[in-house]
Length: 458
Ligand SMILES: *[C@@H]1O[C@H](CO)[C@@H](O)[C@H](O)[C@H]1NC(C)=O
Ligand SMILES: *[C@@H]1O[C@H](CO)[C@@H](O)[C@H](O)[C@H]1NC(C)=O
Ligand SMILES: *[C@@H]1O[C@H](CO)[C@@H](O)[C@H](O)[C@H]1NC(C)=O
Ligand SMILES: *[C@@H]1O[C@H](CO)[C@@H](O)[C@H](O)[C@H]1NC(C)=O
Ligand SMILES: *[C@@H]1O[C@H](CO)[C@@H](O)[C@H](O)[C@H]1NC(C)=O
Ligand SMILES: *[C@@H]1O[C@H](CO)[C@@H](O)[C@H](O)[C@H]1NC(C)=O
Ligand SMILES: *[C@@H]1O[C@H](CO)[C@@H](O)[C@H](O)[C@H]1NC(C)=O
Ligand SMILES: *[C@@H]1O[C@H](CO)[C@@H](O)[C@H](O)[C@H]1NC(C)=O
Image (cartoon, rainbow, N blue to C red; front, side):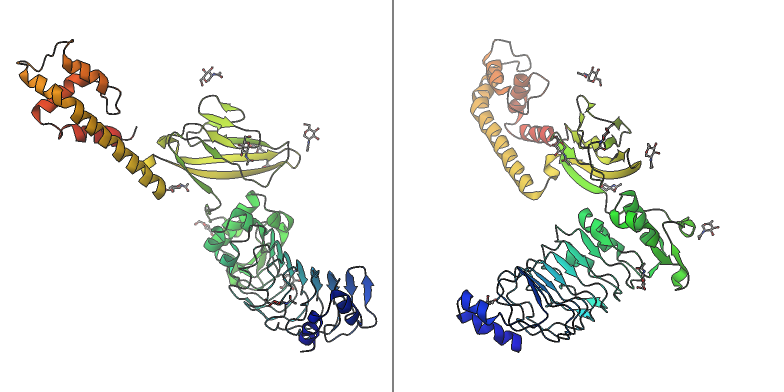
């Protein structure tokens, strides 16, 4: 209540007056230009009067148990709130009302229990969210989904048994989601595999109570092969429980014997790409290795070994690892394997692209429709042309006693030379063929001929 009123009244005043009204801050607080630090003062309430210029509000190490609705409103520059080491167990709806510029919120080392959907809803600009060392057992499925600017979220050292992984798929900037040191027995491997590679790379899942099993093991092995920092930096802390037995916790990346019978399955980390026959396609080698001295090479489905600059006429390879297929054919479909090697770190990484080359009428809907319309137009045009040009030809041919052997100089071949450039041209003498078929029946035999020529692949 105190907080909410404290905001509503000053709103009426000019910022100068507001500054004065808000200047009465608890003794012991320090002001360093735009930082207000009130740490370790035993506060059980957010100070009512805060300077309007404050950008960083530090309330760490106090005794806050709850925050009033709209507590931080009316502070237009507020960017960072630190509330670590307090006794917050839940957040009132509207706590962060009118704080749309907050980038950094630290709620670590509190007693939060459930991350409810409304908690961070108002924090549209939030980039860093610190929630480690609470008592969180559950994150509601939409609690993080609207926070599209989120870069780092720390939820380690809690009591999570699961997490709504699907809710973070629209977080393009996410680079750390720390779920380590929780109590997750199982991971939804397919759900995680369906996330974009960049989001998968952000996941830190070590030191959970995972039950040892093949799909879990395969996922981490893949991440290791990809050089994910989460696995590289916490390699030894990836543990799982043999037979789900709490005491039988093993470092599974280090001691692999339990998994000797696992086939390391391919996950959705293989990139899939669809290309149109004849239209150049670029395959990127997306590994986390970068720098000028990284060397790349590819192996095509035809077991060709490709290094820059590629082979001259069909495959072009760039120094950044990208492989361009200039004129893909149906038979170029398949798994392309890229390997990146960084000599300094003596580190290898592989990346795969599953390329599917299609011919145009198997393409996506809008294009397909467009092409069908175009084909229809061409066919109609051809039929109209035939109707116009073949009518005199047919009459002429009928008069001829022996239609099978037209003389080179007759009208029929003159017409044929006009018709020759049209698409359904066959290898036989076109004029002659047309004369014969039209003599039998005007349109019927011609139309299917066009369709079969156009529709068959290549
Ligand atoms: C707070 O937000 C509400 C709507 O979200 C708006 O009507 C109000 O003016 C805002 N107050 C401040 C102090 O920005
Ligand atoms: C691993 O998790 C347990 C339980 O969550 C915790 O007590 C322990 O400190 C964690 N270990 C590390 C190294 O973080
Ligand atoms: C793997 O399979 C072999 C042969 O079937 C078996 O002897 C061995 O015990 C299995 N290992 C594990 C860890 O299950
Ligand atoms: C790349 O390698 C060259 C020598 O081969 C070395 O001088 C240079 O420092 C390396 N660059 C980087 C970024 O590692
Ligand atoms: C292109 O490749 C063919 C065979 O792969 C080779 O005979 C020819 O010399 C190459 N041309 C150039 C310009 O490298
Ligand atoms: C690699 O270089 C090529 C040619 O400069 C470019 O078209 C391609 O987009 C680059 N790939 C990446 C992943 O940047
Ligand atoms: C990387 O691959 C190269 C070539 O296959 C191999 O010689 C090298 O030992 C590998 N290095 C590592 C660290 O796996
Ligand atoms: C590649 O994609 C095709 C078609 O989408 C699929 O049938 C095939 O199994 C995939 N191959 C691999 C190795 O993933």
